[in-house]
Image (cartoon, rainbow, N blue to C red; front, top):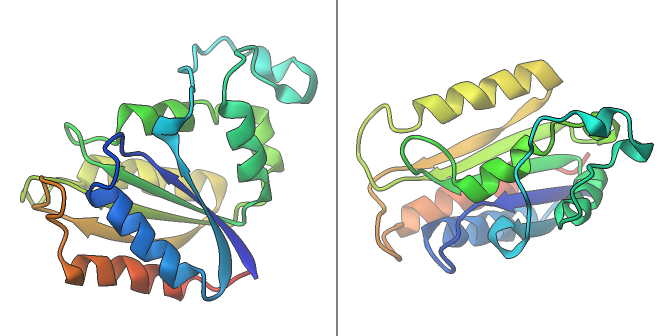
Length: 180
């Protein structure tokens, strides 16, 4: 059985991102253990680019916050799923802070082999997800990760706007991930 960690980036509780994550987790739990981390429930300070983590014991950041707990959970995972609402063609600020804090040599000890993406946005524009997908593909390439798949949902602004077919796409993505 594999271990999946989902970094859920929505600050809006029980919104469209959370519903998609829940559907994903139900599908993924058939072949994996799944842990969802709602990043807005954690106090994570932004990376300041000081690079002190490159010199400190165990590559720990000097900032004393909840990122320590998230590092521990990521260290146990073999698959990472990034889930976020889309704000101004990017991921949420809360999720971005967590991802930026992965600028540490500590990440080289993680066992993550697969990366997946769940995005939901209010707009219907065809290029809505392009900037995020570009970053996603660069991360896949740089870290030599397997693409676990993507669920990209447009036109979901208000809570409950995700449709059953959208939730089913997330469920199917989860179900498709076989433990390593």
